[in-house]
Image (cartoon, helix red, strand yellow):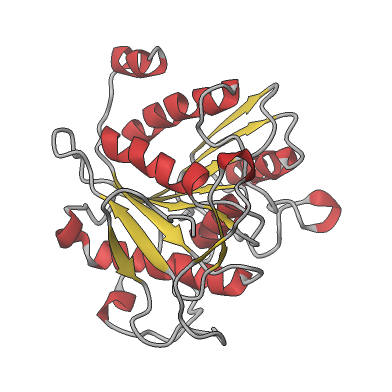
Length: 283
């Protein structure tokens, strides 16, 4: 049997009792026997949870990021687009939470899980030394779709409250979309209809390669953010493909963390000067 996660970690079970809308009994995550590309894949989640990576105490900044791995809403590429990213963020001083959201083909349940995750992190902020106004969400591919949905539908009552944590806001304070998918499913390739943007939509960072088959998702979202007067930063590299995570050997995979780090530090209020921003980009 493949090991899910080798290092010691803490976890938050999102739903202590029944999981809303879930017909299957709670069970441990099912790990696929396929590890093509050296990627660990979770192919079934019925008991959603957050895997916690605590911030490096030497530079902890009080900010948190919930990470949504991709996988087409069929699987979770949980190490390449989850644990490895959480390691990077925790080293930077962010408390990172890898979200095991429901799969396969449970888009509605996944959104419930994402909104509940944001509320849990905000409601447990003292436990994890997180500031309530510095909680972001980051997603890859289908996880980018999920992050965009959570960033635009956070005010909707999509499940019955289960405890005091559901009194917390589900609005993320910032959103990071790395090669997001499925954002252009509107008429004639316009913005997916469920994504309703306004001036309360959180600021966003988007990164994609122009040879990614889902590149239009980022273009459409960028245009919609501009029209809604929402601050955003969009980067499009000429090459890189899709699904590169942040592993060495792909220029896009090596570039986006540098750009995103500078954007995050400005966005969460560290107020870097221009020289400091330049030093981040030159690492």
